[in-house]
Image (tube, rainbow, N blue to C red; front, side, top):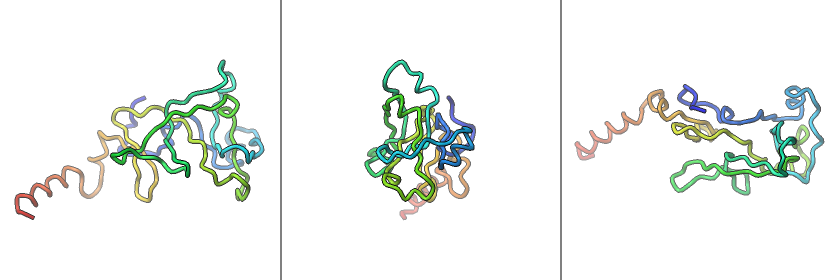
Amino acid sequence: MPALPYPSYSIENLYLFPVYNSQDEYQRGTGQAAPAWDATRLPKFWFDPTAKDSTTRNVVYNSVLALDDNGKEMTDANGKIMLDVLMLTKQEASTVNIPPPFGNVPGATAPPVPCPMRPLASNEEIYYQFGGVLAVKNTDLFDNAQSGFAASDRALLQSIATKLGL
């Protein structure tokens, strides 16, 4: 799928499945009550409706955010956010595990299972917006849409400073 025709957009635009932030939101979105919280599993706020029909025991998702043991996004040597592969049993893939409201229950603060995403287009990049919020930039449009100084403005100013010996 090609990049969206916007300079920057929410990472949720890459997700293959809806994400439900609460049991109530899950019920509103699906018309069914959320399965009971299971403290032996990681929190999981999405489900794959086709997973239970898989002919294999496991389902593989080729593109998810790479997370460390604390649930923080991992970056490569260049500071770019990394993607990873996720393999789940078809039972796990086909259900959510949403903590109850005010999730003061064992396991609720564990890092959640990341939601599978479509592959990034060649002109897309995941980055941190102001405040550490993940977003996607369309690299063809992003620099031209920035208010203030764009990359070309910075390059011009650096050139002028070099010429002036600053």
